[in-house]
Length: 63
Image (tube, rainbow, N blue to C red; front, side, top):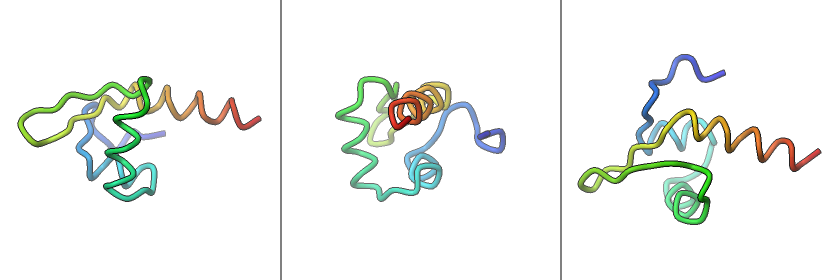
């Protein structure tokens, strides 16, 4: 599904995948315990595995 992206995503890649703004992305990271991320200095790094898991959880809740 996201093979063209690296295992660790930048905030820019995260926004592109979910088609959301940076502000929404930062809020989602703060509010969702399902998405694992680390702050390195001022940069956010997001685990692609946890994003895929989060997307699966969201899609199963919609059904």
